[in-house]
Image 1 (cartoon, one colour):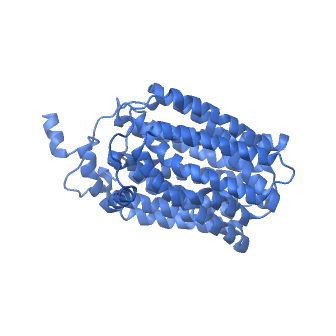
Image 2: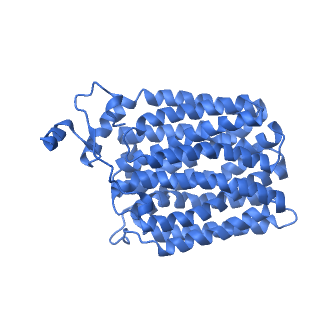
Image 3: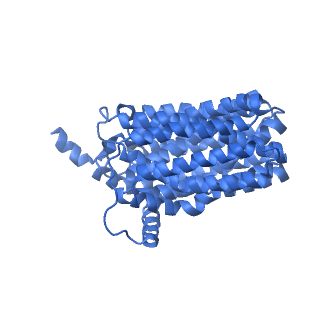
Length: 442
């Protein structure tokens, strides 16, 4: 990454542009309205995710089935997301997000209706999960790029991404805690009802949000050629390629630990839905600290080093969590892992969005989503199988060890990444070459 302290032997040292006056996300009325709707909706989403896991494990008592349901709900992200990125580059993104959020509300309503039946079938839960996966395959890359459409200038992007990450993390703390209360009070069904109702807030917010993107006018290029162009662009530029490969490896080998939390709550810590909420909160506290730190930053400089550090912390936290059977020792380990994973994903997202060309943003972010979300279901199935055959603790320890190895591998590429990214950042005004700095100061 473009940091002077990564490569002291570089012949030209870039200097960060002054960013004290960089716009803050919450100064933007569009973002304030959008984020308010997101907070309500995401609380419902986290409640539904926890309730669904609890319901699946209650019906099957199988960590493997947790992996299967996770696979069904996320596999479409891997298969369909690249086309979602093409759509995001071809249509009005505000209208598209409105459509996907409405479909998500319908899915939550169907899940709530199913939960009220006397004998809910696991096959129906898998089918509804797959339907949500299809929605997310279009929604996720579109919302990533729609964030830029609401900004008045590109300089506010890093802070907007950080605030968005903070909101995701904050709701991740609130949602599971509420889900534990709701499950103990009335079962999983009320969590599904709450999620269905929560979409009303974000849909209303989207209706009133103003975005600068205009409707596409003219002949639409061939979708397959656009898809090919997006992949060629992403993987021919070293910094983008390195980030995508790292995120893919972490998502495949390390992130699936989260699908095992229900099994840990019941079988390792001998608890109930409240215990699961506590575990999720432990990870969320660490993530929130990481998100708050990122929100305090004013630019992208220094994030490359944090990617390495955060991946190491993520791995160390997972290893520590896998080694303990004491709930109160497990919580700080989850907090470390949550901090690491938050910094890793948000920093990678920020760097990608500041490097990518505007006309390819949707496609590159769809590839990022495919690497981040799309590969996780394959890891979920493997994690479920491994936990059945070698135990929950050893599976999570192995995931943590992979994260450490991945971090060290990325660290060896930092100098080259920095050198390749520097010209792009200088061109966009994020860095100023040393020669230009002398002119400015003369």
